[in-house]
Image (cartoon, rainbow, N blue to C red; front, side, top):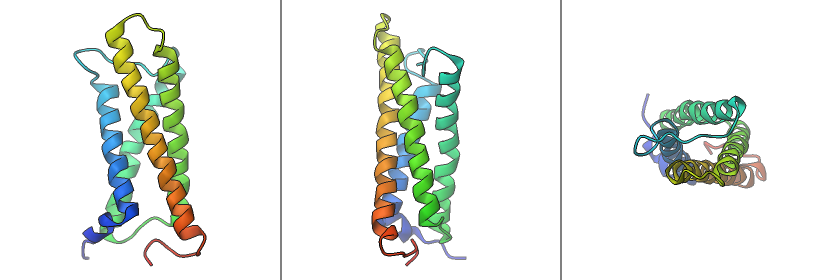
Length: 148
């Protein structure tokens, strides 16, 4: 079994590495916060669960996809574009809730770190949406697989 590190140098591989970096930064912001202040995803427990499950779930899914790329056994383009689209929706929703809830917060430190968290969530969602669009545009129109 040979490792295919060249697969990470393709546009698809680069998107996945960028997504992983953004998800790790978002995870660290959500979990650790800054200067002892932990940001919030929203006012209710549902918003908090949505945010933490989105970040935690994609912290597992994206490395699994990257390992598949490196091992040469990639996910089909349809499944990958669907996963990226779902991730985009979840991250944009989580980021929107965090920004909406914390925009008028009077505690400036808590507001700033929460707005940073929401912004990183939305940026991650946009990158995932672009990845999904790239997959559909590149492979969907020609009926090819990622490996070819």
